[in-house]
Amino acid sequence: MAFRPLLSRTLGLTQTLTHSHSHTLTQLRGLQTFSLPDLSYDYGALEPAISGEIMQLHHQKHHQAYITNYNKALEQLQDAVAKGDSSSVVKLQSAIKFNGGGHINHSIFWKNLTPVSEGGGEPPHGSLGWAIDTHFGSMEALVQKISAEGAALQGSGWVWLGLDKESKKLVVDTTANQDPLVTKGANLVPLLGIDVWEHAYYLQYKNVRPDYLKNIWKVINWKYASQVYEKECP
Image (cartoon, rainbow, N blue to C red):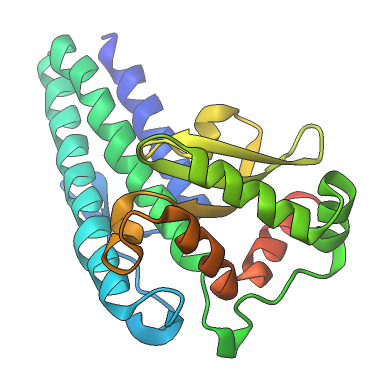
């Protein structure tokens, strides 16, 4: 039957991305489902850069909504495949991409942040620091480029610092809505992702996205980005 390989590819990609970012998994009727990951810091720990109110709403409400809808879409996909309902299989792809991407992106985002007391904002050293200087000229130039591209992004989306595993080069790119960085290229690995949806900053910064992008660097977890870089580019 032609639908089984499609289900395997869809779930296989989801599981591969999920395991690579250590997302929380449970089993439901033979289908892998996803749950909200815990944060390694308190909601208020990133203040004043990001308010505790924003962090709590962002994590408990927005991220949880993506997970809930992702699990629902995966279950519907399994049912559609079992019934041979090709129209439903096709229609569900957008929901899987949007909500699955939302889960993947936010799970990275939480790890990209850390309180100042735990090293937030400290620039990277070692191999990632050298790579940034090589590809962008300086840390300041990289921050300026990411902030500018994030501010210029129309609508909602993400701005990324990624590693092209094939060329071994660092890249700055943006994705629309909840598209993961991998949608821009199979060789791209996200080192740092900044959420520029309004729900990430509006309660505190209103419609002034550049101010949010200016202050978020004070709580960026470069240690995590360095760990990913060293793993992917030893």
